[in-house]
Image (cartoon, rainbow, N blue to C red):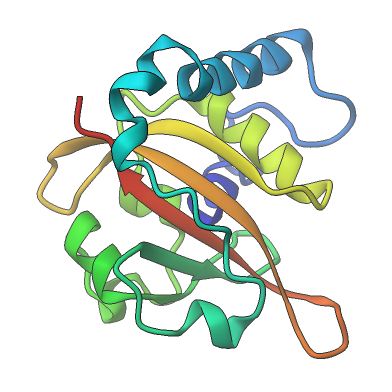
Length: 172
């Protein structure tokens, strides 16, 4: 989510545009991502996959959790609003190092799939929760695969106030 959104900013010319319909290539990537989670590979990792729903309010997202949670702004470049201790432990950046920064600048690397990111962002911008599997990089440069589940957070008036992402490392 946040990570995905920040990677898909207009300044990042190698990322496909988010305007208009998804291209067939983007749709194919979205289906491949779904297959990665639902196909034969999932059976090897499903026991450890966290299937809990996303938080829906900022207050819920800020509660202590063992899940790696990142909260971003809803406007480009989707800067980090908050992260929890589990996210700090997974990604290697402290809250102070990540606050106000673009997640793509923090976590993307050579093996991060821009089409998977763009497909995920497209779903989120349509108001849908989205999930994909990405390769990210920690502060120290360690590569890790993770299941990224993103969605909107709502305020008391029912309006979207932030976006939330839950990262779960996949150990194959």
